Length: 115
Image 1 (cartoon, rainbow, N blue to C red):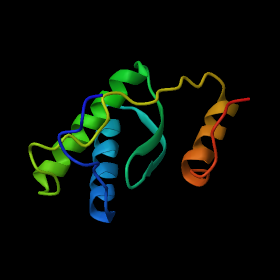
Image 2 (image 1 turned 90 degrees about the vertical axis):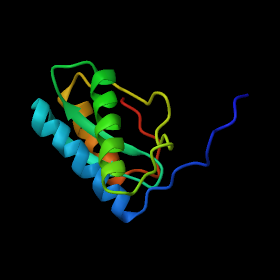
Image 3 (image 1 turned 90 degrees about the horizontal axis):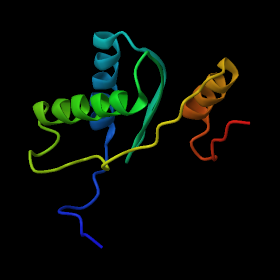
């Protein structure tokens, strides 16, 4: 098993605010509809409506956030704060979108499932 080059990154209040602002910037710039965001100490959840594949959106969120953290002096250049990929789920029905928004905003301690 490959070892991490550094310990896990913990996002403090200022880090989380910077990541949230970067995600909002991506959404404004690319005209994505941000329906919910919750930046946690070690990951972030979003619900986004867009005419783009989720992996492209996720990559933009991670790159904008990393750049913003570095420009703010909150992250050293040699630190990679995100895992290589992330979870991306297609939500085809509005009822599923509503469930996802509720989970992102209120249900972080419960497993999310679309039923």
